[in-house]
Length: 194
Image (cartoon, rainbow, N blue to C red; front, side, top):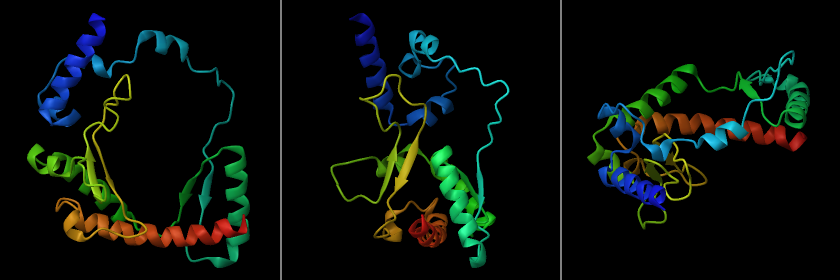
């Protein structure tokens, strides 16, 4: 019972700061709060399997962006990777490296903003909010809590108005969205052949 009360107190204190995990890092804490600890009983039950000698390489699918003649080969590789692995890495997908680097940098810029700026995007009663900042999206459902701050930007089927996206990442999100939507259309063509 005391442990549960301590957890509730730590959780309440964490929520009241409204600064998220970034706030803990900025405060230069020297000890990770217990609400983020994985119980030792869970850790002892989740020992990694012995994978010695296994050749574990994530399948890489080269979309050969712009090369429609290789479509059947790509479809075959996607099918094989999906059946055997359930996932794969895609290269030559048409999203320029500069766009990928800028979206990562813009995410960093947003998370470096003052809490007052980020907190404008916290979840509220507004159902159709297009950009949502979470300083731990599963506060009441996860034990331990996830050590992360994140945001979600709902871009499809209807993209947000630019003003709904924070200035720190607005142009990058808009540009990234254009390329991802094109990639989605390309992926749809591949999935029709599966």
